[in-house]
Length: 441
Image 1: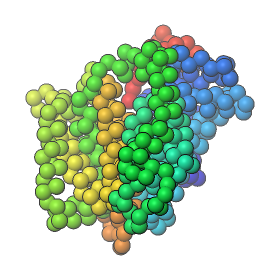
Image 2: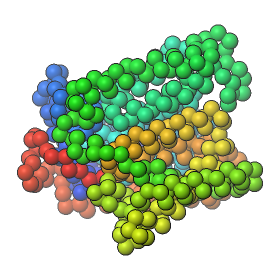
Image 3: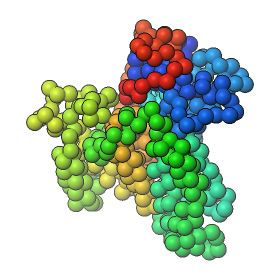
Image 4: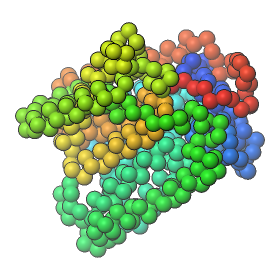
C-alpha cells in the first residue's frame, strides 16, 4: 500500500496529467464530482458527466463536501482507493504464498497503467475493481451462512452502484452458490446442516443474494432510459463488439509472458498430461480470433493499448492482425494450462468471472484494454500464488519484476506532460458544463 502511494505520489504532486486521462478527469469525472458536491446530500442521478453509476463520485463528493474540494485532496483520496485495491490483492494472495512472492505476483497489477493512473487521477476504475476483487474473494472461499451471503449481496450492490457494467460479477456468486453444498474442490465435506443444502438450494440462495444489485441496476435503467446516463448513449450503447472474446484471450496471452514461470510450468505439465486440451484450446482460440476483425479501428472501438500492434500497416486483408491472433492463441493455451492446476471449484468460479467480463464487454461498443487488463492480472496473480510452489526459477521472478519496472517508468512519463490538472478544457466544453461523450481509452 505504501509502495503504491509512493509511486503515484509524484504524479499527484507534479500537478501534471497525461492526455489519456485529461478528458476523463477534467471533462467528465471531476465535473460529476463537483456537481454532487453542490447537490450533497440530495443528488440528482438522472444525468451527470460520467458513463458509470455514481458510487465513486458520491464518495469523492463526500470528501469534497466535508474535507476539501481541492483537486489535490480529491486525487489523494483516489490514490487511497487504489492503494486499498492493491493492498487487498497482496493480502489475499499473501495468504497462499510467501510475502515476497505475493509482492512479485502483484507487482504487474500495482504498476499497471490502468491501475496507477486511476489512483493518481480522478478515475473510478480502481473502486470498481476493488469491488470485483471482494466478490471474487467471497466466491472462491464460498459464502457460509447468512452472514456470508449477506456480505456477498452487499458487496454486489455496492459494486453495481460504482460501475453498472460489473454486474457480471453476480455470475461468480451464482457459481459459488451452486457449488457451496458440494464437495467439489474441497478437502473435507461441508457442514451437514446449513443454508442451501443442495446445489439447487445453494443456487437459489445465491440468486436471492444478488437481487438487491439487480434491482439497483433496474432502477438506474428506468431512471436513465438505458444502461448509461442519457448523454452517453451514443458512446457505449451502439451495438455489440464481436471482437471481445479474441481480445480478452490476447490480453491473457500478452501477460502470460509476464507470468512466464507459472505459464511455462503449467504448459509443460499440460502438454505431458492433457495434450488434447492444449491443442483444443489453441484450435478454438485460433478459430475465435480469425472469425472477427482484429485490426485497429477507432470506429469499431478497437484502439489504444494492445491495439497499437494492429495498425493498418501490420494487418492482413484489412482485418486480421497476426499479432493479436497469435496472442489470442497463446492466451487460450495459457488459460487452459494454468486453470487446470487449480482446484475444480476455483476453476469454475474463475471461468465464470472471465466469461462474465467477456459477455459484459461484448455489449460495449468500446473494446478498451482498461476494461479487461485488471481482471486478467488478478486471475494470473491468484493462480500464480495458488500453484507456483517449491523453488522459483528466474522465469518466476524476472518477468514480473521487469514488467513492473517498465510499467512504472511508463507511468512516470506523465511527469513530462504539458497538461496540468488546472489546464482549461478547450473546445465547446468548460468545467462544470455538460460535455459531449468523447473519450479516449
